Amino acid sequence: MSKIKQKKHSTFIDMTAMSDVTVLLLTFFMSTATFLPKEPIQVTSPGSVMEIKIPDAFITTILIRPDGKAYVNFDRPNDRRAILNKIGKDYNITFSKDQTNAFLNQPSIGVPINNTTFPKFLDLSLTEQDEYLKTHGLATDSADNQLKTWLTTAINVAREDGEEYAKKYNIAIKADRGTPYDNVAPVISTLQDLHLNRFNLITTLEQMPNLLATN
Amino acid sequence: MAEVNTGSEEPKKGKPQKRTLRVDFTPMVDMNMLLITFFMFCTTLSKPQMMNLVVPAKDKNIEIKDPPKIDKERTVTVILGADNKCYYYIGDPNYADWQSLHETDYSPAGLRALLVEKNVKAVREIVDLRNKQARNEIPDSTFKKQSAEVKDAKDAWNVMIKPTSGATFNNLVAVLDEMQICAIGRYAIIDMTDGDNFLVKNYQEKGALSQQAGLAPK
Image 1 (tube, rainbow over the protein chains, first blue to last red):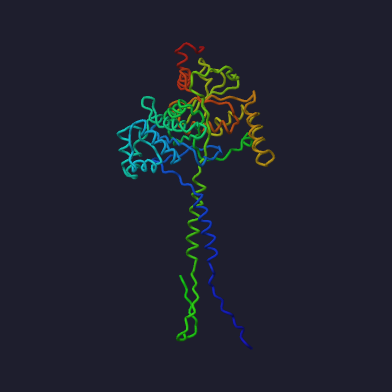
Image 2 (tube, helix red, strand yellow; image 1 turned 90 degrees about the vertical axis):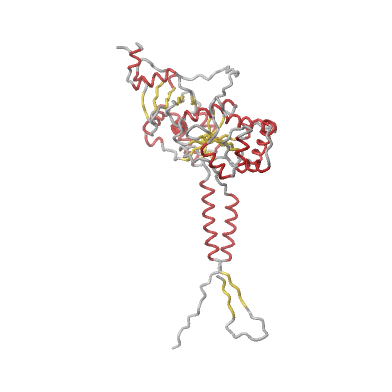
């Protein structure tokens, strides 16, 4: 009787093809990923059954702090540059290259337009700016409506380009669930003053309830 | 790990050695998979939803020639109070009777039950349309057009939303959401009037205010 000789197989699997596929997928996901802009405060959006997704571009976000101060975020760097140029012209401030870059890199605007604190704020490092923003914000009350000044500047920039701000941009209001209505109302009123009568409230998705089954 | 296989034979002098070079890609694939998972989560979780809202223009120069007529009997006024409570009355406010104002909450059994009961015809039609759309029987454009027609029908209900200073942003969104759920197309956010403040206070004091004012029947 002769023994059946088992041939020795190598367990080595060639992973090159697999690696190729994963790298391709990785490249795809990396290029499509959109990161959330860094925000000075964290808020929990209220739930809603609305299923409209936020558009990718041309969106102006107004973030309301529970104490009523607001931050505004213009999403396109080109717009931010144009707005800064406009401020420089209107307020006679010359911004250095570093200050311009600082403005472009900081997504949230929480400092009023003036020629003292605003350029000083831009001189801070990015982490110092974040710390500063956590405790400051734009006033929205009618006595000193700093949010309105910023939005008016943005509207004027758009107008000089022959665009209508309300048509080109989506305006989104973001606030925490617990924010009192009295702190949201001034922002809505500001938007009404600026003829921005259509805007959006940022929410999180909730299931649509089955109505007739409960009846 | 790279494996370098040299032949089993003894290397001969002067002859270049034959080598097969094999690189193990398994750790590389592992790492890529982890990164893919991370980026997948980034793309799907970062998109929040939004709710659109249209508010009337503040411009006083615009003259409304033909103001929309609203049926008083088909109007619910919802007052958003403090502590997640809300109050409602139907039609005109009745300052004499404190029990004309009712208290409710934002739960499905509260405001939603009331609005669905009142607006049941429109709700039925909208649910029908939604089901048809889910089964792909009608295109989106038809759905939009028909649901707008249902919501704008003459016998559909109207809601006036009056947030007080005690209400939160969550309360406001909850009520606006109910408008969506209960198929109400005509609604507006209106500031509180002195009369509304009186109604709420009168309700909380169980009619004491209207007795003082000499409004309540003894």
